[in-house]
Amino acid sequence: MMDIEALAEALEFDIEDVAILVELFVENAQVSLANIEEAIEGNDIDTIKNEAHAIKGSAANLMLVDIQDMARSMEEAAKENRKINYLSLFSQIEEKIEILSEVQISYA
Image (cartoon, rainbow, N blue to C red; front, side, top):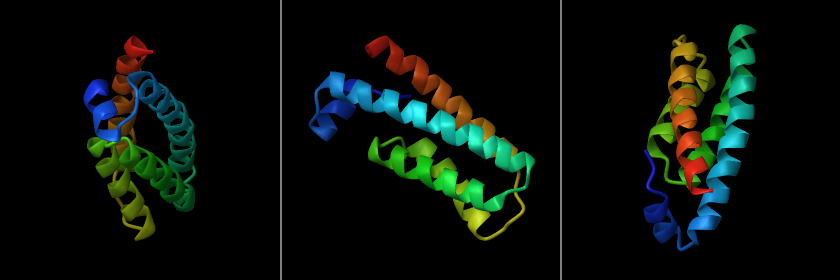
């Protein structure tokens, strides 16, 4: 999913710095995901929108296009109050972040 060396080169950072950024992203995204899961259960569209926005922005900073796109879809649907399967998107984002978490651990 992620080539930390290529990302470090693109961002002009050391690999260790990128590993720290990825670790922080994962930690923050997991908090946002917990909030989204609770918001889905409570039909709290504003929280879904805000937390998806946070994930989208952080993912964009790290060039995590898949996560960014999924979070954008969730945010836009919530913003437009569209009925979608939020739980499905949540699961897909959660899966990508879990994979990312395993990748970054090996570089930390």
